[in-house]
Image (cartoon, rainbow over all chains, first blue to last red; front, side):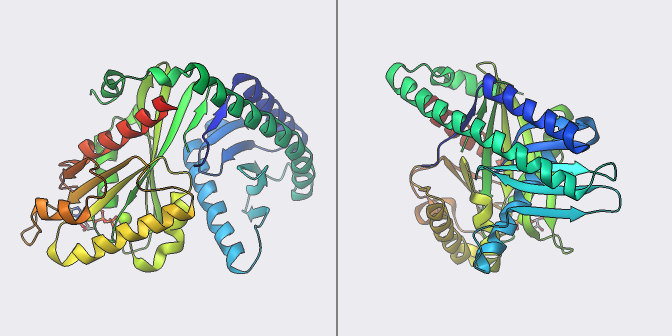
Length: 165
Length: 194
Ligand SMILES: Nc1nc2c(ncn2[C@@H]2O[C@H](COP(=O)(O)OP(=O)(O)O)[C@@H](O)[C@H]2O)c(=O)[nH]1
Ligand SMILES: [Mg+2]
């Protein structure tokens, strides 16, 4: 079965650091790190300018569709997508197999610059992901040993309360 | 694949509405969208053809409140039902946490229901999931129409593993939240089992 994606504070902060630096270095408007299933992992930049939830879902849909296209013509994946607009442009790349990096930029930056900086940041992020993965599997062992997950305590009442209104 | 973020204290789950074309999947999401207060929902996105048929997916993000201090967020997706959109359907099942099957109760749609459940099983397997294991709810939609199959007969034909099953009239909202609640419960229970 596919494992859950679990993020702890330490890795989350480090990911945000990488995104913040990437945004500054690339002069981008905003940067989003998105899980391949369409959920936002972290973000940086002019976030109030965008509907971030919709962005995450559509970006993942876009990547999934493009992955499908790649397979149809015998490619494993297209690792970079670029959408050019009149003012704003979108650079999409895959990081560490399970995440998508979305960079929104305008003419204060350039495709070349974004490409260069994304490459560097991707390496940093991949090592953070590796750390996340090993932590998650350690935690999984912890849980089966001691039932220490906060969710092992979820009761029927907790769940009913969610739907109470 | 539930996404748990300990930093922002969020649980994100993905629910996919599956079923034959025109069965009422999009109508389920539309009703949920209408009846949810503005602060607990995001924008509903429909990637549809001009004739209003789902082309790729509908998407509706919902915040249901907190469990054990964690904000629980459900991302609802529908798939396009038409047979020839199978590639898109497969993509949307990626990372799914729970499935709602929306069956069309009309007599002439029974074959399409059966075919679609079979297709669901196959596509889940391609992602390494098993319909026997995954949180799953079944809905008999369009109960308001005249030419429908009796519920108990539909149950015998379509119920797969005694999953929670509901009669519905999605356009009027009947059974819509009951179905959503059932699958959400199963997902959270799964989570509590670790
Ligand atoms: N009478 C009736 N019509 C319904 C019901 N649910 C959906 N419909 C109609 O069936 C058609 C297809 O619904 P839609 O939600 O787009 O189906 P989808 O292809 O599964 O997404 C639309 O015209 C709906 O208005 C229902 O419960 N009763
Ligand atoms: Mg639809």
